[in-house]
Length: 132
Image (cartoon, rainbow, N blue to C red):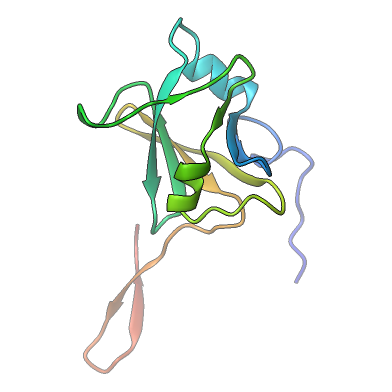
């Protein structure tokens, strides 16, 4: 069954991050306004493997957490981050849309990835979907 898609949806507007074919991580203008509004152009990156989400914050997780430097266009060379997270953007851009906040970390979910579902298995082997 076809699902109607409005011209106005979260994938085409709002806050988003793109991994481009040059293995850079690029923040759109809305994210730049939120995170790069002061003199510092350094941000800290996080990765949630199960949910395929990128986290971005102005603050480090701990003292050993190294920041990524973003240029005036909102891009950072992040090939090492993308490889570690198994995000392959060499054949085309991979887009992540804003998914909310977790503390002071902005979360971005990979487009095309549905929310992670969790299941509980009953004694007879049946799986029951649990609420997230």
